[in-house]
Length: 314
Image (cartoon, rainbow, N blue to C red):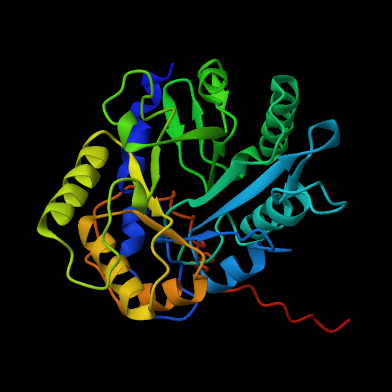
């Protein structure tokens, strides 16, 4: 079953990369930009959509009855993932004819990061099942894997953090959730790309360059080699937790990641990242995209003379 999704997952290896060909227009969809919600963000989604970023990672904590609440602290009434993220995000997709914006060509990456002190297996499983059901209520708008077929949607949802959902996901014939992986999963039969389509790692796990000086040749070679191996294995790559140094250093890091083919750059500096991506175009890569929206059919023209509708005098 998992192997059957590999064909679709291979497409994901370049899906977000297509967004590296960025338009200079304000408000264009920036698939290469991924926002990391801060702990104090009361409502993280609006700013992400306003800037056109192509993804968002939100920390969540399981609460009563399996509901997921935003933030790593104690659940706060009304601050649920469903109310503040899922409902408005998918409502916008539905209202725009299946896309977040008119120029969206690749799925928006929503990463649900389980955090907090709850480690009880039953509580985490209940929360996962609640999330799974909430997504199935919006099935036509989401990326999914059904049997041997992967179908891209306007949003692709993955899970990371303290809960490991790989075994649970592997048992589902139809799923709307995916697991996040690391570079250690590249080439692993235990974590095929149909189950773990995204490689996501913090920059400091393997690299030490901070953008202040030219990147060492060894680190550049390693970065390019690892990204290439992940793509060859049918996966996309997202790098996060970059050094938060001066603006010039951050720009150097972003430029180097884009040049290496990293599909998504994640960070807290949404404004700076969006500005950088709009100003620095990168050659477009060949990648599968969302299905084309049907165009309007022209109204048929009459083939003969119109009948005379004037009324005869009585």
